[in-house]
Length: 220
Image 1 (tube, rainbow, N blue to C red):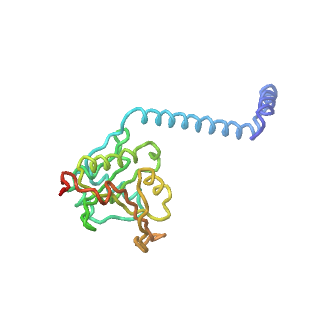
Image 2: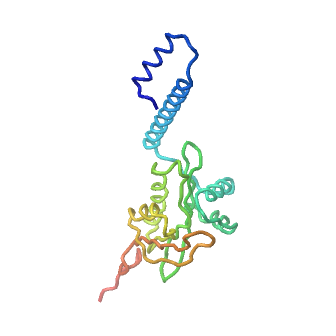
């Protein structure tokens, strides 16, 4: 782009000469227009972020009427596909499956299930994700907090866990901020995507020695 002072002087000279505009003037005008449009878009997006931070985003339970929205979100967000059984199970978990809305548009979702394994009651996060343009707006945090609140109110869960592709560093960092730890790495966990390995991240909800809620310790 030409120096702004040269641009101003050349533009005035051209206006006074009443000659046909040279090509560089049209090019400069187009560049200036692009800059103005980008600045306006950036300003509008900033205002959108401010607005979203000022009000809570709405969440809604997954049901037969919006299950197609969930399917579409998962197809866009995740590199793996989910079968019909996955979506059938989602319809039966109630508050453990939620859509996240931004300006009444479904932009993310979280789906969990109760898992009884290792002699524990565990909550497994099957999916938790948000469309790329709506990330870093607190939507993922809101969905994860919803899950954590359910576990806290229930009081009988030993831990929460999920699988994360080993290359997904942003997701790993996100969960670690909430107290999740990598407890295992499963080789060849994913099919048809690379890398195929997955970390198992887990957040313990009570110490191994603590009795279940409501269970009194016997004293001699």
